[in-house]
Length: 540
Ligand code: NA7
Image (cartoon, rainbow, N blue to C red):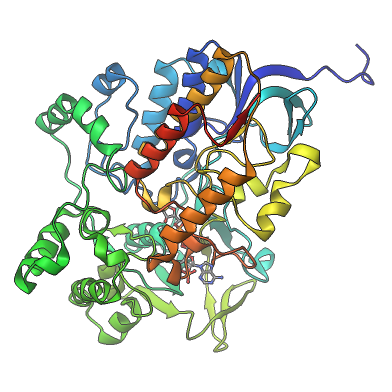
């Protein structure tokens, strides 16, 4: 072959993007059906979120006994979690273990970033282009690219001038970074910033935290697991697997404490105390659903949490900055923390409220705030979050029927059918996409496995019927979006700014990105669609 002749594109039944929790399982499920599958992964190993987010203190906020795969009892028997909320290295090891045990690597191409994908209607094939210029063809194109994987890493004017080292948390290097004695700045106090701050406060010389929105965070209770704990969870494998798929947020706890209105003030207080002591997200998505709808109940619960925070901070002026008052508890992602608030009692930690004194720019020496003060730094850590839900897909040039552009469409309005398919993009299947339960309101491993199973079911069905194309009608998509919005708009979540609503990205259309009707209810609807022969979808 001469250099001028292009190699024919490689042809597969399915191409998957992303070797994280969803992608690995999707590969497993499709290979099980005998499909020729290729998984493309931008990183040099498996892990997804747990590959990229290796910043100091990175840790799962879901209990390990529900943050796992359910498709194989053998896997579950062979793996032993060390603690209730494992740190990033352990979670990454788990995903490597699964990839090895299931022999998944042979169908994964690492160091391969997808830049474009377009659908050929006549051939019913997707052409998927990589950064390296290769093209792969596939009947089915499945994105498992993550809900929180497109980092917002260039948010500040002058960043490139900074003479020190600058990292976004989601692009933390593999080699250790020596923070000892350094002047470190952290911008952002979301779930990520909190984990970084509480971890490095005692390691660095000086820590300057730039906070825009304070957080209602819950103290994590994270005991080491004993052999007896692990044996207990393993014994409950079948029960837990069934349970997590039916609860509101995909955990083993649910809103089953009765109605708030029927409890006396003492009983409410006792229930909140008990949930608080559990040290998990059960205080939020396993307590009282009314907090999402009723401003008064929400305020009562918010007061409870504010008092808990206040009691831990020595300086009342610092406490006033750290206690949220502009939004209610639980109306955006609630982080878990470990000695986070105590970090602000340390002499080497300074809190800068950037609502009062906004960040003007980054200079050679550090962060310049609107009061004219230069906060001099050796290292600047951006814990500034992600273009959630949409970013992973809009950073790829995805073209559907007639060359329509997903990026252009979502720039105007973010619409999907159950977060699993999009009208105008046949044979494109999406996980962790907008309008399905996701990170925001679901234990990710639960909802991702459910989505992967549903997609695998669609493909099996098509093949069994000798068909080759599936696409939702505009009508079913409109209906889904409408019912999603009706549920979302009844809650206080849509009244609070956060990445849940897309308000952290300038110009992004506002819509609650995650489905809020509950994991159990969502799954039921997905199952019904399948049971009715994919009613509302065109199969041909
Ligand atoms: P988040 O939750 O989006 O947090 C980002 C933080 O960065 C948040 O405190 C932001 O303040 C802050 N931020 C972002 N841009 C700026 C600018 N320009 N100036 C000042 N502060 C800024 O991201 P995380 O990575 O913490 O968490 C994302 C999810 O990953 C998390 O919910 C888990 O599910 C895992 P803001 O709140 O916008 O005022």
